[in-house]
Image (tube, rainbow, N blue to C red; front, side, top):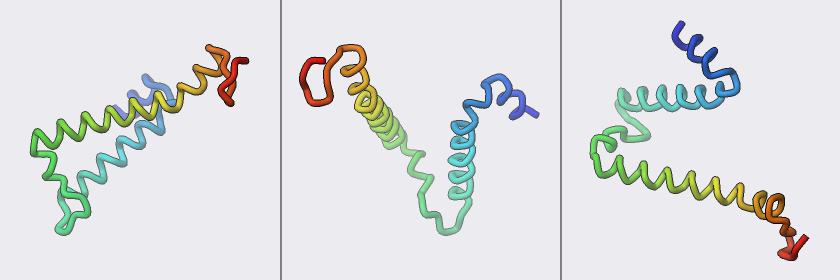
Amino acid sequence: MAITILLLELGFQNLPFLAGIVIITVFLWLEARSDHPSFDVSLFKNRGYSVSLTAVSLAFFALSGITFTLPFYLQILRGTQAGGGRG
């Protein structure tokens, strides 16, 4: 019931994001209870590791976003051409 209300509040355009969060959560839950995990979840108990992993992940996502959007900004808003000349 709560998931349905959450989906209605957020709209169905967020469904892939929510599905990804659910899949990651289930994976981590299964790995934490496995006798032979492929991913050691106990690493996240180390605060330094968790903070550094979060910082690196945020930096990666920010750099990826800039790398993706910068050509559009330069071509559409600034009027440059893909070859480097002025449009």
